[in-house]
Structures are given as C-alpha cells and as structure tokens.
Amino acid sequence: MDLSSDILQRFDRRDFQHNLLELGELYAGGIVFSTSFGLEDQAITHLLSVSTVPVSIFTLDTGRLFPETYSTWSATLERYKFSIEAFYPDEPNIRQWVTENGPNAFYASPEARKACCQIRKVEPLKRALKGKKIWITGIRAAQSPDRKGMPILEYDEANDLVKYHPLLHWSDQDVKDFIALHHVPYNPLHDRGFVSIGCAPCTRAIKPGEDFRSGRWWWEDNSRKECGLHVKSV
Image (tube, rainbow, N blue to C red; front, side, top):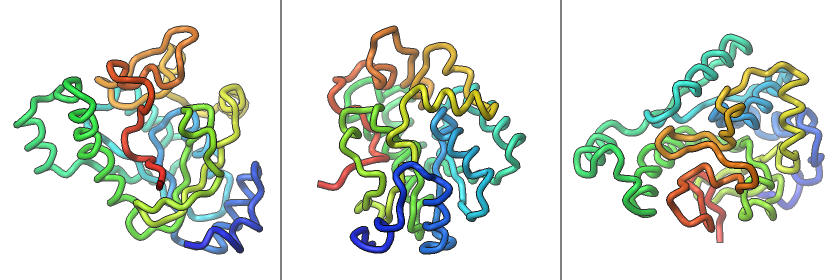
C-alpha cells in the first residue's frame, strides 16, 4: 500500500473523526480495530460509537485473560451495542503446546514466552487481519521506547496493511480525562495499579515510579518487551 501520496496528504495528526472519514472513503469495508479493552482501546471504541464509518472490531481471547477483562468486554457490549468478534488460539496448536510444556511454560525463558504469545496472540491476529487494509490500534508513544519514533500511519509488512495509531500522541492524562469525561466503561484493574493488561499470568500491577511495561513479563529483561503483535519492519 502506498503511504507516500493521497492518504498522508489528507490526514490530520489529532482529528480522529476527520481521519476516519478519509479512511472510509479510501478503504471502504477494509478497516478493522483490535481491542484488548484497555483504557486506550476503550477510548477508541467510544470514538467509533459516534462515527458513521463502518469499522469491524475484534479481540483476541487467549484463554488466559483476567475475569475483570471479560467483565469489561460485557460492559462494552452493553454500552455500545457493537459486534466484537473474538479470535481464539488454534485448538490443536495450543493443546500440543500445553501438553508438551505445561500450562505455565512461558516463565521458563523469553523464547518459551514468545512461543506461547505466537500461538495465543500472533497467529489469531493474522487470521483477524486477513484481507483488511487499515488496522486501527491503541498504541501510544509513551508506552514503550520502541514506540516513541512511530508515525501515526505506518505500513505493516508482516500483515500487508496500514496501521493507524490515533492516540499515538495522547498522554496518560489525556486518556484518563477522556474516559472520565465520557463515562466510558473500563477495566477496574486500572484502579489497582495495572497499566498494561494482558494475560493474567503475565501481568502484574506496577509500583510508583516503575516503567509502563514493568507490569508485563516482569521476569524478563526490560529492553524489548513486545509480544509480537506490533513488530516493526527493519
């Protein structure tokens, strides 16, 4: 996909509704939003609720999510009446993985953890994105050193589509203020120190002063904590 011409000229850095209309005109029927029901994704869900542009929404259910995440999922459906398609790990693959390695093998090494993420998240994501043109994400630059230099639009070679990060330049406070202003349902774990919420065995609350990603895969080196969903092309 060409990011050098039409789409970049028509984009506004912070105006989501304007950008969504432009994307809808250029890629009608090809826009998808992935939600994990975190604060950023809940903010985007609310923004989509007041838009007329058709956007399909999906989530990845790894089978190891917090009960609070499922409650937030239900509250979101009740509030917005959206259809949210769930994608699950391939049953034979996850069955073989757990049989051979046990249910908590991801603690053993970074390689084991990434193998688990590949089965539970990356492969289902590829199925969810197949045939799509635009992938809307809740990525923010403040979330990780690897994300600080991201453009608001980027080509994702692995999935052959364009990723749009509408909240890329929002601060933590911007997101919290938006959620409060619009009374958006959110995961109660955020009020207990959980910042980035993923699978229950791999997520903990962070302590004051700790880095954003410290609550994910805390037993690993902090330098590159990504699960493989957002891999930058080199």
